Structures are given as C-alpha cells and as structure tokens.
Length: 135
Image (cartoon, rainbow, N blue to C red; front, side, top):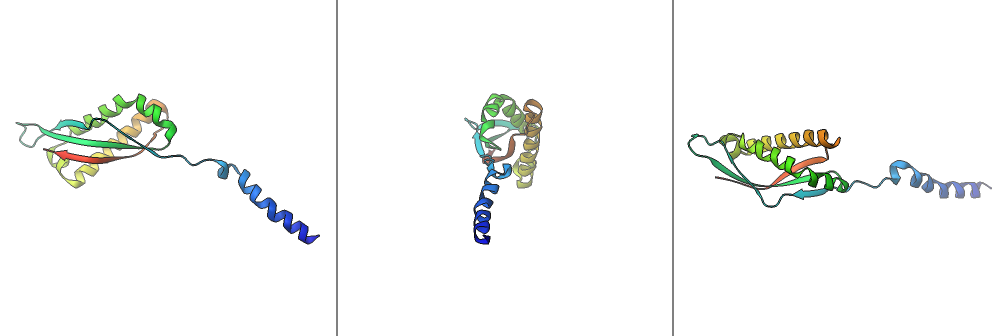
C-alpha cells in the first residue's frame, strides 16, 4: 500500500511542474536588428570651422522576436534619434571611450522612451556599436 502511494506520488510530481504556468511559458527569443547601410553623419568639431564625420554600425538587441515588425515599422524614428544624438555631440566626447559609452547609453534611453511612447513597450534591451569610425 505504501509502495503504491509513493510510486503514484513520484509519478505525479513531474506533472505538477509541467503544468505550472511559469514552467509552461516559452522563453523570449532575443534577436538583433541592424541598419544597412552604416550611419554616417557629422558632429561638432572643436574649431567650429570644419565638421567632423562619424560612421557607426548600430545593432539593436530586441527583447523578443515578435517585436521585429514594430521595430521595422519605426525604423525612421529610430534612425532620426540616433543621428540626432550624434550630431549634437562635441568632438572630445565622440573621440573618447567614456564619451562613446555615454552616447550609447543616451541613445538607448531615448530609443526605449520613444518605443514605450509609440508601442507601449520599450522593446529594445540594449544597443551595440559594432563599427565606430570618426574623422
């Protein structure tokens, strides 16, 4: 009697975990979204008599594959925010590693706010600069 009770208990425990909603949900699939061609824009040069140029390849880390259509739909807004942020940066910020990180975080914050406003969800987990050239 006790053996059959233990056997039925051991066999039913995995079923309890399999039907639990937290276990049954599929994990979100993170995807990356890049822009083609690279982003090329100018920035504020130190002497103000000439413009500096920057070429950046940006990859967006998207929280879920299902958000890709919304990201594609809002691509013009996203590009405008990225380019607008770079054009307002001084030369010393563009050329320093700490400045580059500050710019990346500022762009990420702006993109998350814009996507939250447009879609109700921030969608973008992070952004990566995979190419960063300045002149």
